[in-house]
Image (cartoon, rainbow, N blue to C red; front, side, top):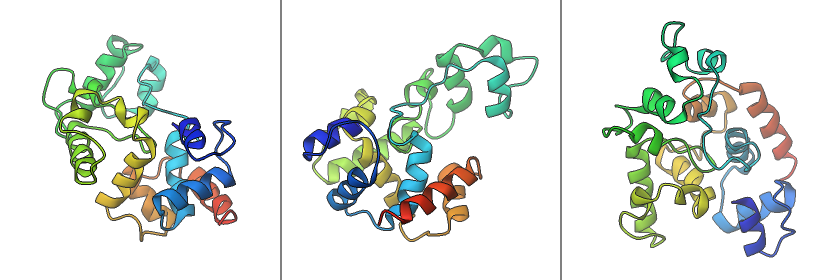
Length: 196
């Protein structure tokens, strides 16, 4: 994750996201429109500190975060059960087809890559670049955050043609599917614009 990146490139390995680390990420990965990229990615990952989606929700939080999947009649069966929550929310979509795919392919990496189809597409993208072996990601999805943390966000921007979307509202809708956290994303983008 972030501290590993900092060590690899000779930065102060404090695990904190700041201008020096941001500029090095931009240099290494040739990030276009870095303020917009980091505005989204750092919102999704809490400044590049979250490695994977935490699905250990209370009943009240489930009703807030996933009202489409939980209601007063079923929420208590799922509260505090991450595997069951993942399978309920993500099962049978995004290419998930096996019993525990929803949990197995939960959000990971800097952009919270989610779903069997996205994991397989990411693995293929890495294969084309010679960065991983066949089935490496599919057999060990934790590699998304352990080995390819920033790359997962770059992949997401590449495959969704987001590099030229500079309007924060439009970009948020494409990244999030809605406008959750919009003000934070705007604030972050404005702050990061000053860094570059």
